[in-house]
Length: 265
Image 1: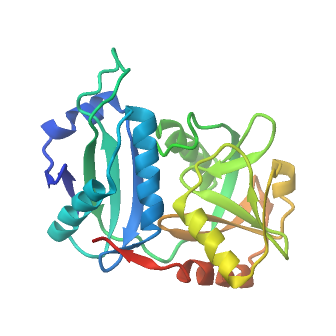
Image 2: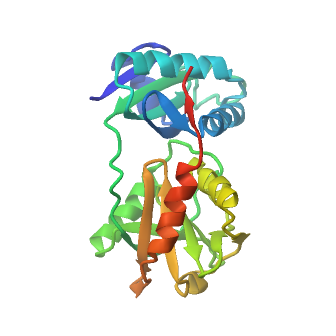
């Protein structure tokens, strides 16, 4: 299953030409189960905020939900869903002013809940506009490619002053035995991260948000990665190995499970 709808209609190659050639826009990704999504309100806010910033336009929640429903009605109630916002009227030669946003909804098979553990290699890098989930993914995939070529599973990004920020397509958290520690640095604050933080608060698990240096990161008891497709244990950074903390992983899964599924309606 792989289908795409643009503004509520099946997308053609011509429809996607502007996105392919200009590559200016933003998106959000989510897992849909039974037509419902965890953190749907967070996804809506992300899309609306980024549309205002990139296109000087409002994007009503009703329009987003209508486009999601149309695509899901044509596909499956369980799927991986990506909604990309771009503007066919955007001209990079004259990029100022307001542009009418186009909505591309694409569906693919649901992500597996069985996520492998990760060995990470660190790289000095900060994404442009890190708070926006924009379509400029070239460096993310390039550093991931370099990490895999070096014998690791993925890339971990570190700021020029040595602070851990995020992974290629996920957020990272650490465990010191008493607290879940979220690194504070320029990064995309993911929906999964926000759901986990709310769930851990609900469970009464202590959390901290603070600067974490790469050197400190390698000394934690355990670590994990999280994005829309799930939670993965991190087993090491730059060859420094962590232990596997099954209690932590159970708490994280329970925290995520405590967050409601919101029906797309």
